[in-house]
Image 1 (cartoon, helix red, strand yellow):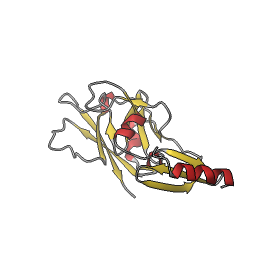
Image 2 (tube, helix red, strand yellow):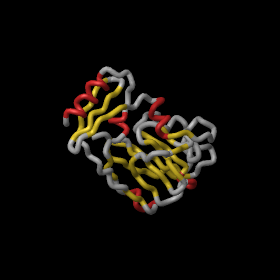
Image 3 (cartoon, one colour):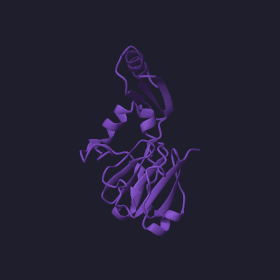
Image 4 (cartoon, helix red, strand yellow):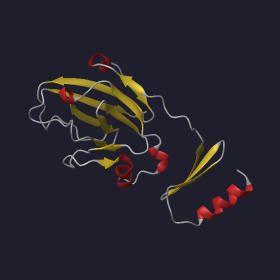
Length: 178
C-alpha cells in the first residue's frame, strides 16, 4: 500500500459505513460491521461448473464453501422427510431446466426466494438481510438452472421449483462443508 492508500485506510477506520474496501495489486482490505478483513486480492472468479443432464447428478462437485451432492428421490416426499437445515435444498426435478450451473454471484442477480409468493429480490438484498459481509459474499456460490437462480447455496432456495404435493421427483442437494 502506498501513502495515499494508508491515508484512505485511516479515514475509513474512523468511518461508520460497513462494506467499504481498499485494494492494492496484492491485497484487499474490507471494512465490515464486525471487523476489518485483509485478504489476498484474488480477482479471478471461481470456474463455473456445468451439469448438463440428470445422469451427471451422480457426481459430487466442489465449490468454495464445500462439496455439493445430488440425490434424486422418485415419488412424493412428506414434510417429515425434509431436513430443514441450510445445508439442504429440495427442488421439483420435473420443473428444473438443464443445464445446471454452479457459479459466483454477479451484479444484478435476482431470484424469487421461497416464501415470497413469486416476488423477485436482488441477491445482494437477500445477503444484506442475512447480514453477510462482502468478504463472505465472494465465497457463496449459486446453483442455477437455465431459468435462473435455484439456490443461494446454504441460504435461500427459489419459490418456483419448490416441492409440492404434486411433485413426483425430488432433487435433493446437500452441501458438505470442508
